[in-house]
Image (cartoon, rainbow, N blue to C red; front, side, top):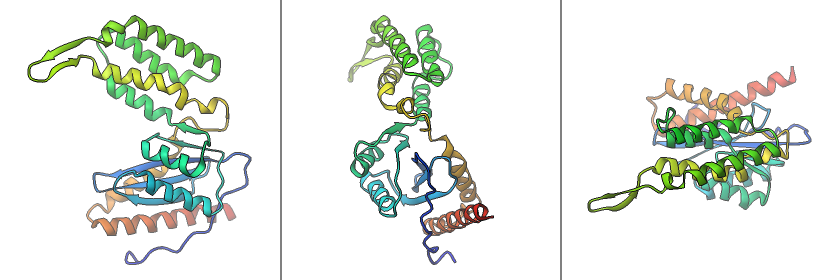
Length: 249
């Protein structure tokens, strides 16, 4: 069975006023990435493809495939990687593209730490955590003003440097600077959902599908790369077929 590809599955986009495409990648160590495409509120996987890096050209190929199959989307939600952004713009133009709030919040926390020691960094973390409470444009404007006030107040802290022999001057708080850069951009990238109430703010809906695939891979971890790919293709085929049969009953 693993020596052949599964049958092609028919298109199954169900009638809806708004359809949002969720995109995320599941990495299998450094071996390869499985890009997954799913419509929000549906468990069915519209498409999945393998790649060794999230290349924009390969993702665009997947998006053209979905478009040619007749799928139409009101917007896209993804982690905002450069490859995905370029591909979405190439295929769908200026379609609303929500960058997953969970991914960016996680990047901020990774940059400053979950339990920062400096008081000013603790305040920055509270601002980052407050992102989850924003449900209106007025609240977003208030948050942006608070971030601006924090940045102005802590300008000297952000610009602190030290001299490293043989390497020159380096910023001391590189992680905090990175977090601020992410937070400054968030208002433009991760609050598209404020204009579209049905648009997800994260790709968390995909976590269920991704965790199922990851668990199946762990069970068959000893397979060679091509056999793993074939196994995952067949698993997705039967996964979708089961969901479709449940809809018919």
